[in-house]
Length: 382
Image (tube, rainbow, N blue to C red; front, side, top):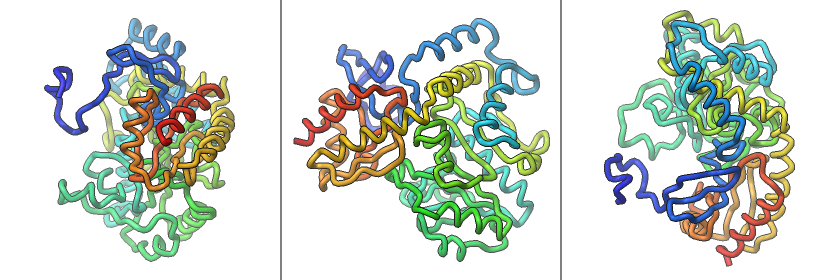
């Protein structure tokens, strides 16, 4: 344990590197070593580190107004909400939070309020990840993460990923909503099977359920579309966002169809910091750059190149994912050890399953940076 982390709770393993600076897809540690960042702060820094437009927006806002509470209107939150609503197809309302877990908490509370007493259960999939609060932890379909914190809040049910029949069997009169990711990020970068989300949408329509899509990791260009669900031609009732929205500044959002959002009345849900000017000024700058750069198209092109290069490595048996949210399946090697060896060689990735490494680099990636990263991974694997 180093002096810099000695006072921190041990909720993460002891860090092997201390990063002190970043620029674009590069990071530098406190020893002056440079790294190519292909994890992007867990799919957060989609515009790269220290993007000047975001930095300038933060500096200007910090000198203007930081906080007055949500008892009053501020800027530029309403503008960011309108942009998100437009990108999602319009006709919705936005609640701002500070993280993806809080965005999902808002969605869960909204589903309960919309469903009414006795209609509160939310069905999610095994292998999913929706957050670390008590409710979002139970929504997360990873039972091994539940045991230490039992009893968890009631009202959650899990079904196998990709199995519509099992989902339909799990629906009873207590169910209000289905919560799914279009690509299971923490579960191993598992893309929704063909036809799955469309069948779930039909089931929700038939049974009068809300379809909540968790786009915390997949949203805002990461998959090659603005939102992951757009690959599958489905229209959700509720969408949750975070990560890339602030490019490193904590902010999340829960969007809901206007008639669903109307279930919340004043006092039903709130947040001290959610949507405050500093965070939304960063988000406004992020969204402006994303639209100017057409990041979905860039992610699609860069993802195709990265996938092709990865599949050219002998030790990589498969690549799954969409756009620039990818997992490289290895030939039985320990992915955590491979990630550690990559870090030592100057490449940041992580082991998302025991045999697969995850790659979620900035969306403004260059071809040269892709080739450099694959060359480092190739050297590590050989």
